[in-house]
Length: 381
Image 1 (cartoon, rainbow, N blue to C red):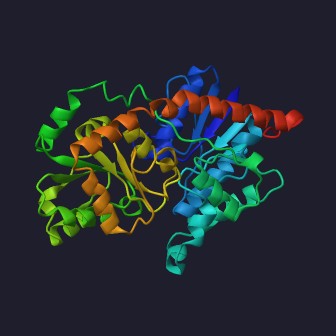
Image 2: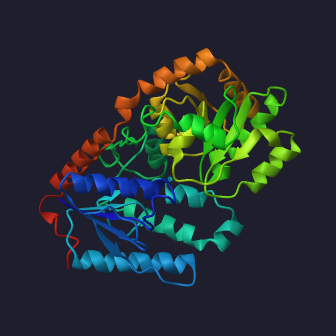
Image 3: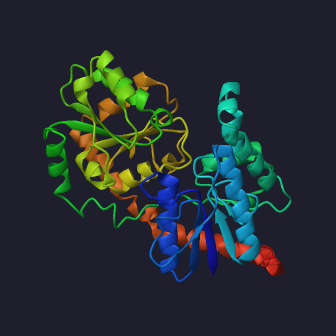
């Protein structure tokens, strides 16, 4: 099968969508498919796949987005593919995969000032609307039931257009037995004691992912010397470290130097805390579960659909409920509770395997081709 994966960037260190696209391209190529990665910066693509550079020049983000769309259209006019799988709103594709959520929903929540400062968000929403309101709308890959409900709220698409493709992780990479020495080494590097109970926060969009609430929750542990919060992510956390200082917990909050090797931090931690306000299906949560880490997150995270409350961690109803978050974190101070939860998390590993994810996606591709019938050449001029 000849497959085009369309994205903006390809560096897997940048974010979840980029990492997913890289991993998917690599796995599809290994399965024998002819995979091209179409992007403005196709500098990081797996060996064996074909990078295709899309023009995206312009002085503003809006101009660069418009140019990327035009360049993609030109390429699709000239190049036949069996499947065009887009990670962002485009004019035409067979499979639309909104990793961070629907563009229409995000633009609707913008303040007037935000729309003036970032008109690209309105344009992305308009492009998505034209794509999904069309009689020939593509399949929308829903990472969770949470995402499917969101799509239904904004678009009149039936279930056939909304297959669930739950996220997955490479359980060979995220294996708690793979590098057992990483725990002690990472704790020593971060100056963590053997009795410290370490809450791990991993994220790039720190505000949306709930870092403010995680720091505020640490205030409940000012008299408990065991609890620590370790922050891992590329952005500066200066604002949140300042907050920790003001509420008297700065000595309990550690901003780790950025590293692409998140595995070592999972090993060093005792549980993951991610009180996110919106997350279609957090890969961080699934990676943590695969590593045997209990998770504290929210019902606004599709990844939590694989969890059972009190078994694999805690799923909060309100991301802003800091007292409830503190209580959930307090349960993790009990070694026996964490041990039981960790064993339950490890038992989830077969459901998280990437092989199952790719098999499900391949079946969706086959259904798209079957439904399309003799119109497979519509991307050629």
